[in-house]
Length: 87
Image (cartoon, rainbow, N blue to C red; front, top):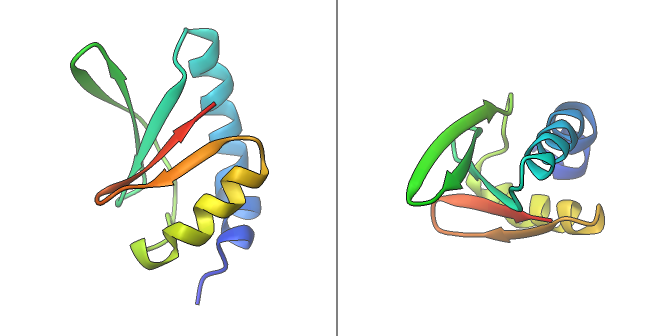
């Protein structure tokens, strides 16, 4: 069983922090993480693949991951097909 907090500290934290900093500097305030770990951003009505998180946890772990992300100061919401993250 995957512990979302462990995955975040080992795999996700550095990538997400880098993504948020870069995207924030370019005027974005949100991203989504798809089931395959792809990070997407929306610009207007277009959706762009930005980066990919390695070993992204399965959907059954997304609620736990959202709790971890919310404790870091991000706002994470589990949707049907992705995890939405804003700052």
